[in-house]
Length: 131
Image: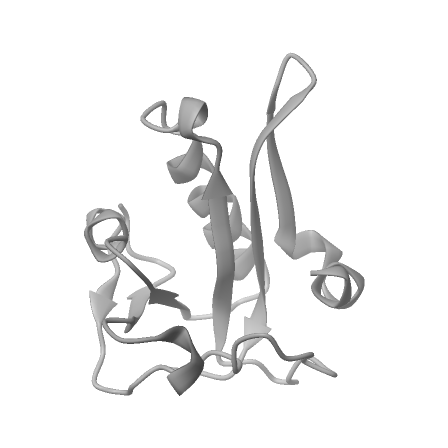
Protein backbone atom coordinates (compact mmCIF):
# COMPACT_ATOMS: atom_id res chain seq x y z
CA UNK A 1 0.00 0.00 0.00
CA UNK A 2 2.82 2.41 0.82
CA UNK A 3 4.29 1.96 -2.66
CA UNK A 4 0.94 2.63 -4.33
CA UNK A 5 0.54 5.77 -2.23
CA UNK A 6 4.02 6.90 -3.27
CA UNK A 7 3.50 6.09 -6.97
CA UNK A 8 -0.04 7.45 -7.25
CA UNK A 9 -1.20 9.57 -4.30
CA UNK A 10 -4.15 10.77 -6.41
CA UNK A 11 -5.43 7.20 -6.40
CA UNK A 12 -5.69 6.83 -2.62
CA UNK A 13 -8.99 7.84 -1.05
CA UNK A 14 -10.36 7.75 2.49
CA UNK A 15 -14.01 7.64 3.52
CA UNK A 16 -14.50 9.44 6.83
CA UNK A 17 -17.33 10.61 9.05
CA UNK A 18 -16.87 12.80 12.10
CA UNK A 19 -13.12 12.27 11.87
CA UNK A 20 -13.37 8.47 11.89
CA UNK A 21 -11.97 6.38 9.06
CA UNK A 22 -14.79 4.24 7.66
CA UNK A 23 -13.14 2.93 4.52
CA UNK A 24 -10.61 3.47 1.80
CA UNK A 25 -9.94 2.87 -1.88
CA UNK A 26 -6.67 2.47 -3.74
CA UNK A 27 -6.24 2.62 -7.50
CA UNK A 28 -3.62 3.48 -10.08
CA UNK A 29 -2.98 3.56 -13.82
CA UNK A 30 -2.10 0.16 -15.28
CA UNK A 31 -2.06 -1.87 -18.46
CA UNK A 32 -5.34 -2.49 -20.29
CA UNK A 33 -7.31 -5.63 -19.40
CA UNK A 34 -4.95 -6.72 -16.62
CA UNK A 35 -4.07 -6.19 -12.99
CA UNK A 36 -0.76 -6.58 -11.15
CA UNK A 37 0.13 -9.82 -9.40
CA UNK A 38 -1.21 -9.91 -5.85
CA UNK A 39 1.16 -9.03 -3.00
CA UNK A 40 3.88 -7.64 -5.26
CA UNK A 41 5.48 -4.25 -5.64
CA UNK A 42 4.63 -2.46 -8.87
CA UNK A 43 7.99 -0.80 -9.32
CA UNK A 44 6.52 1.70 -11.81
CA UNK A 45 3.31 2.91 -13.41
CA UNK A 46 3.06 2.30 -17.15
CA UNK A 47 3.30 5.24 -19.54
CA UNK A 48 1.06 5.27 -21.36
CA UNK A 49 -1.40 3.39 -19.22
CA UNK A 50 -4.35 1.57 -20.75
CA UNK A 51 -6.73 1.49 -17.79
CA UNK A 52 -7.31 2.53 -14.20
CA UNK A 53 -6.75 -0.45 -11.92
CA UNK A 54 -8.90 -0.56 -8.79
CA UNK A 55 -6.61 -2.33 -6.36
CA UNK A 56 -8.81 -2.25 -3.28
CA UNK A 57 -12.05 -0.85 -1.88
CA UNK A 58 -12.75 -1.65 1.77
CA UNK A 59 -15.35 -0.40 4.24
CA UNK A 60 -15.99 -1.17 7.87
CA UNK A 61 -19.19 -3.19 8.32
CA UNK A 62 -20.99 -0.25 9.93
CA UNK A 63 -20.25 1.91 6.88
CA UNK A 64 -21.76 -0.49 4.33
CA UNK A 65 -25.10 0.11 2.67
CA UNK A 66 -24.84 3.91 2.85
CA UNK A 67 -23.40 4.66 -0.59
CA UNK A 68 -19.81 5.10 0.58
CA UNK A 69 -18.38 2.42 -1.69
CA UNK A 70 -20.17 3.96 -4.66
CA UNK A 71 -18.70 7.33 -3.72
CA UNK A 72 -15.18 5.84 -3.65
CA UNK A 73 -15.71 4.13 -7.01
CA UNK A 74 -16.92 7.46 -8.41
CA UNK A 75 -13.79 9.22 -7.17
CA UNK A 76 -11.62 6.64 -8.91
CA UNK A 77 -13.68 6.93 -12.10
CA UNK A 78 -13.19 10.70 -11.98
CA UNK A 79 -9.42 10.27 -11.63
CA UNK A 80 -9.36 7.81 -14.53
CA UNK A 81 -11.37 10.27 -16.61
CA UNK A 82 -9.04 13.13 -15.63
CA UNK A 83 -6.11 11.06 -16.89
CA UNK A 84 -7.88 10.22 -20.15
CA UNK A 85 -8.01 6.49 -19.44
CA UNK A 86 -10.73 4.64 -21.36
CA UNK A 87 -11.47 1.88 -18.85
CA UNK A 88 -11.27 0.67 -15.28
CA UNK A 89 -10.25 -2.89 -14.40
CA UNK A 90 -10.31 -4.93 -11.19
CA UNK A 91 -10.46 -8.41 -9.75
CA UNK A 92 -13.68 -9.28 -7.94
CA UNK A 93 -13.03 -11.73 -5.11
CA UNK A 94 -15.37 -13.58 -2.82
CA UNK A 95 -18.96 -12.55 -3.42
CA UNK A 96 -18.08 -9.03 -4.64
CA UNK A 97 -18.87 -9.59 -8.34
CA UNK A 98 -22.50 -8.56 -7.81
CA UNK A 99 -21.46 -5.25 -6.26
CA UNK A 100 -19.12 -4.51 -9.16
CA UNK A 101 -21.74 -5.58 -11.70
CA UNK A 102 -24.15 -3.01 -10.20
CA UNK A 103 -21.45 -0.38 -10.82
CA UNK A 104 -21.14 -1.20 -14.50
CA UNK A 105 -18.31 -3.75 -14.42
CA UNK A 106 -18.55 -6.86 -16.57
CA UNK A 107 -16.42 -10.02 -16.57
CA UNK A 108 -13.82 -10.22 -19.32
CA UNK A 109 -12.22 -13.30 -20.87
CA UNK A 110 -8.73 -12.72 -19.49
CA UNK A 111 -8.03 -14.57 -16.26
CA UNK A 112 -6.78 -12.75 -13.18
CA UNK A 113 -3.34 -13.64 -11.82
CA UNK A 114 -3.41 -16.95 -9.95
CA UNK A 115 -2.80 -15.43 -6.51
CA UNK A 116 -6.35 -14.06 -6.30
CA UNK A 117 -7.77 -17.52 -5.67
CA UNK A 118 -10.58 -19.67 -6.98
CA UNK A 119 -13.64 -17.79 -8.13
CA UNK A 120 -11.80 -14.52 -8.71
CA UNK A 121 -13.08 -12.69 -11.77
CA UNK A 122 -11.33 -10.05 -13.85
CA UNK A 123 -13.85 -7.30 -14.59
CA UNK A 124 -13.81 -4.10 -16.60
CA UNK A 125 -16.00 -1.11 -17.44
CA UNK A 126 -15.64 1.91 -19.66
CA UNK A 127 -14.81 5.12 -17.84
CA UNK A 128 -17.32 7.13 -19.85
CA UNK A 129 -20.17 4.75 -19.00
CA UNK A 130 -22.57 5.84 -16.29
CA UNK A 131 -23.37 3.64 -13.29
